[in-house]
Amino acid sequence: MKKLTELGPVFYAIAVAGFGVNQLVTQNFLTGLFPVPVGVPLRTFLMIASSLLFLLAAVGILFLGRKWLAAALAGSCFFVFFLVLHLPILLGDLKNAVLWTPPFEALMLGSGGFIIAAYYINTGAGDARWVKPLNLMGTLSQYWFAVGLVVFAVLHIKYNDYIQTLIPAWMPGHVFLSYVVIAAFLLSAFSFFTGLKLTLASGLLGVMFLLWVLLLHAPRAIGKMTMEPEWSSLFVALAVCGAAFTVCRQTQVWRGYHVQRGALAN
Image (cartoon, rainbow, N blue to C red; front, side, top):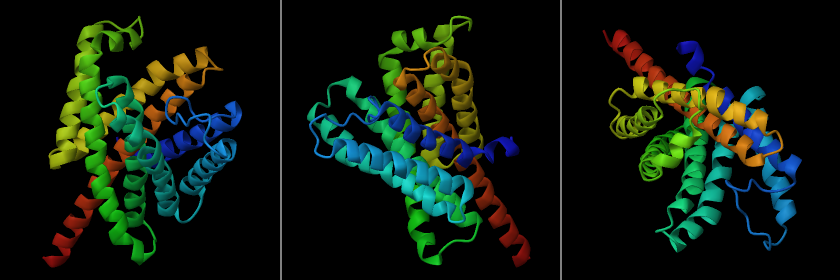
């Protein structure tokens, strides 16, 4: 499990790069995740700029020295989309449940970036001036991530019949599996809010999303190679998986730090 959770930032970076490549290939904002209106001034320029920022952030997380800065850049991009694009749309029609998915995907992706930034600045060389701000953002992001889990649990309850149709036909017990997912969202959110069994909950949550990537999203995306939404869904699941695994790693880092301090004190 340790080796798997260490890949959390890598999974997140691959997903972020995937968003950038997807936009550049289609020459359009991601239709579900970033529904930027057609009439927005400089729309093409903004699409290219955001794509390049995603690619820059991904390269930074994977290869550069200041990984915490690259992760914070990715998180900031998603938060900008959440605040400037999604939140006004959502507040304009709160009763429309269909509008709740993209904003909270963006919120969880932004939270994931800052969770990873906090992890990196606590485990490697970083600018001391950014330790407290990034730890604060990492802590807040953990709660925002949990809010997203609660929202998706509610949406899964509301649209449970539809959710069951997304489960591959070869899997048995569609009804049972759909409720397992709802329970996993709610229990993970409780753990994220309270800190109880956080290592276990975040690790299992990451495994669940990774299984979705491998068993659900990858076959759908490969079967529909030119369908941008299928690839976007795959990368969202992979990014959330990476963020969850990083929370698992972060809690292990903190536990090791406190154990070390206790040994030195004795």
